[in-house]
Every structure is written in C-alpha cells, then in structure tokens.
Length: 200
Image (tube, rainbow, N blue to C red; front, side, top):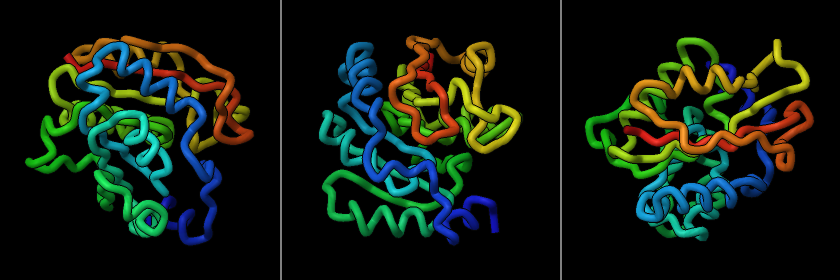
C-alpha cells in the first residue's frame, strides 16, 4: 500500500479544500487568454482527489473534464460527490502510465498538487507523461507550491522558479509564472505559483 492509499484510509487528506481552489478561476482565465479554443476543450486533472475543481472547470467553460487518481477510494468519494455531473469522467490509475487512447487526447491539464507531491525523477516522469497526454499547443496549468513552511519536509514539496524553468525546457514554453499569496491550500503553504506552460 502506498503512502497515498494510507492517507486516504485514515482520512488524512489535509490538501482537500471541500471545494475548488480559490485560484482556479484565475488560472482558467489565463489559459483562455492564451488559447480560448484550448481552454474550452478537454481537460485532465491528475491526482484529482475528490475532484472539486472538475465541475468548476466545466462551469467556467471547459467542454469535458477527466479526473484521475492513483487511489480508488479517492475516486469513490469523488463519485459520490460529483458522479452525476455531465461531462465529468472519473477513473483510478497511475497517471504516468499513458494509454494509447490518451496520447494527444487533451487540450489542457489542471495540476493542483501532483507536481509538488513528487520529487526528483518522479517529477520528471510526471511532466513527461503530461506532455504525452496533451495535444500540440496544449496547456499545462498548475497551482504549484512556491514556498512552504518546511521546505525540507514533504509532501508537499515546494518548487523554485529555476526548477520550473528546467522541468519545462525543451518541448515546452512557459507562458505564465506568477507567485501568488492569496490562495494557499493549508498552513504549510506560504505562496503558490500560477504556472502555465504550453506544449510546443
């Protein structure tokens, strides 16, 4: 059993806000300014948890949203909350294992905590998988943790500007990287990045 399965089993889901993130609307609006067509397309939420942001993205203008999580219990709880929402699909599985049908299937990815749940090679593998999911010109839209009260301890793990620039070098172009202090998800988070990278 992974650490994430254990956290769900004992209900230690401190990252859950019981609703969409306060910066989700700003992130979506920035995506819409960059590419209205992509923002109104198909979104993927890796590590969606209870998927609170899924229905909200649909409300903001997304055509459809796929929420995925490694932990089946997370998807079960998301289903109880939002299973009847039209154009929201929920499933469990390893987000880094990209199926043939999912290659270049999505216009945008909404990352709320996955990037900062990982470190080192696992973080690289995740970003590489996201590139496979996205269509050319697709957007990786993230609310990543810029600073935490305990940077040496995690998850969550903070990520620096220079680390983002390395991760999204090569086949990406960073379109937005803005540090925000008005929407931390728990007391450990001091500030967050509003990050949008476009797949070239």
